[in-house]
Amino acid sequence: MSGKKILCLFDVDGTLTKPRQVIDSTIEDFLLKNVKTKCPLGIVGGSDFKKIAEQMNGDDVVKKFQYVFPENGLVQFKNGEEIGRKSIQDHIGEEKLQEFINFCLNYLSKINLPVKRGTFIEFRAGMLNISPIGRSCSQKERDEFEKYDKIHNIRKTMIDALKNKFTNIDLTYSIGGQISFDVFPHGWDKTYCLRHLENEGFDEIHFFGDKTDKGGNDHEIYNDSRVVGHRVCGPDDTKKQLEDLLKDKF
Ligand code: M1P
Image (cartoon, rainbow, N blue to C red; front, side, top):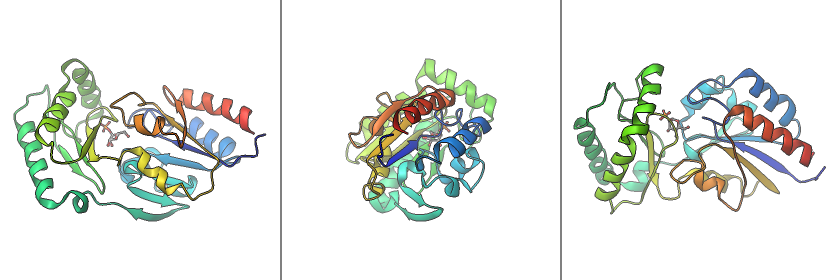
């Protein structure tokens, strides 16, 4: 037993759940009965709170996990209470933001896809989420878009166009899921949540994520010197790596 104060911090999609799916009861039970009894638990997701709550069996997620950081930690919950949120419009300014949104709408109006649905831009507290197919697509359409995008690079090509156009705004583009990408100011990636843990007295923060390669939304935090990074390939692998960690540390 190490005697160290450890926090286990998890990405959601692809780490605790299958993409955009509800957490499996085996994984949730394991976390709450076997891990939480030994060390505090945290979540840092790219999604907004509504989606994280849907995937984690309801709004009570903020009571089950000591720390919940939706939108990379631009919104923060600690012990069941919201303790802060950051606003993208205050940071970028309305004028530039509208220029950016208008460019995206114009770009999206010119591409053809096998299917297009609705909600192409989701405006969140600390980021924009942009989806070429539209967030209101069905699960089947979502899975098909992901395959189509792997061949046709729809998201990557759009990100390149945005990078070329908006050299004057300090934005980061991150592909964290199947049908969309997130846009936020530099440094507002998942490492943003670490500032809310700095004074919490942890000796080690173990982060578990699946999108750890460059361009994935776990890349920066996985490589941050303030955490011990664990690259996983799905919820079952997360459980296995946690079992190993528990054997080693407790
Ligand atoms: O948590 C990872 C991503 O999940 C969703 O992505 P998609 O809908 O494309 O599968 C989004 O909520 C996205 O913001 C988030 O990063």
